[in-house]
Length: 369
Ligand SMILES: Cc1ncc(COP(=O)(O)O)c(C=O)c1O
Image 1: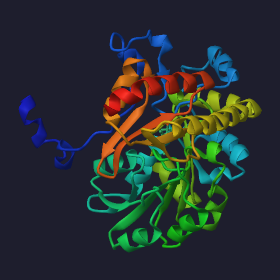
Image 2: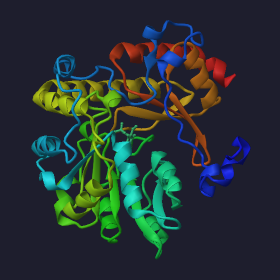
Image 3: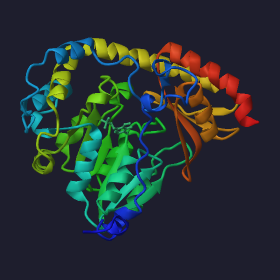
């Protein structure tokens, strides 16, 4: 028997001091901490879809009869459905329980102790988190003041230990796009490059059709954002077939549940409805940007995703986040060396924008004071 104090001696040593991933707040954990009832909380902190999923998904799940049966481990129908949606052959496609699971799986495929991962920061923190869990070494390449990727610095960072390069496109939490020319410049280095297109439906920018031309280009997508299915955890990747085969080999069995299969099936039958909601969100993003620009104490950055990053010019982002939370409005704040004093606001419905802007106007003076 090992005493609980001694457990660190058995845990892999690099995990003892691992910095965890800060996930978003569940509204049900805020009871008593906010001024509004749980159902009135406006959740703009995790880039979820304020319109929810297609009604077809809820109807189909309510009557799905086979919850007692394991899903198809090799995802035959799912991959075929996604072939139909993407126009890219099923042999390129692997599905995950959220794209986070695929990020983790790809890192597990390529990265062992001491292998290097090139990360263009600030960016989505899961890349760091999963790399560190696998014992990989992060090589941090800072983006410029407008969060553009520094292609020359990425190339200069490549060493014999480099195994993987991450590019979120649009980037999270900043919302900007990396031009396709820059992505291909990096892909032409020959190292495996993962282009994370979690927000593709909002940006319209993709390199997915190019995957079949390269042995080292991988693209990730998700149903969490555009299809309103974050709670069901459905992501997929488009890979060179050889990499897809390895990922299918090393994934845990039945990694995508049957509810996810039903949800993809029904969402893809209701594509016009869902893409109509995406259009509404994109229009609202532009309105929100205009409203945020009018506030003296915030500097919003243009975004191609379903969120807007703002630098807080006057006052503390952490205080602003707390004050908004107590009014029942959830946003994310960031205060790291390469992402100082900023908040990220997910695009909600028009009434969410109105409530947020009203609260920001009320708080503006207070947080800067
Ligand atoms: C860039 C990026 N990639 C991946 C994800 C994770 O998505 P999923 O819900 O599919 O795991 C997110 C979620 O916020 C994201 O911002």
